Amino acid sequence: MEIAPYHHTKWIVVSSFFFTIPAIYAYLHHLYNYSILLVCTSLISANYWRKATYSWRRNMDLLFAKFAFIVFASNGVVYVKKIPYIITGYSGFIILLYCYYLSGKLLEMKHNDWYKFHMMFHFIMMYEQCIILDSIVESRK
Image (cartoon, rainbow, N blue to C red; front, top):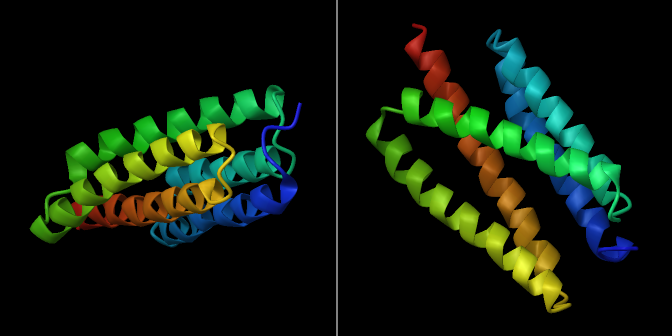
């Protein structure tokens, strides 16, 4: 059973690859575990959204996304110390959660803009990942 039409989900496939930007940053700074985690998250997410159905691909996406979220959230708490990063990071985190919630609610209501909020969720998540990775790099200096 299709969860959402492809003319919406194709944009989420694109936004799934936003995570490759912090993956490249992590790779260039020798944070290979984070880089691999982000590339895998992108690929698993894109694979699910290319044909969004209730399937093993959805389960894999939900599981892997939660794992990546826990890894980055816990590292954010430990490493993010700069005041500008704290302000934008925690504010962004709240907006990120709201976008995720809203995309799900709008999808349930079959509202045509639901996917835009999910794309915004991906974009803000990418920004948060960059803040966290930069904080890890700074802590190693």
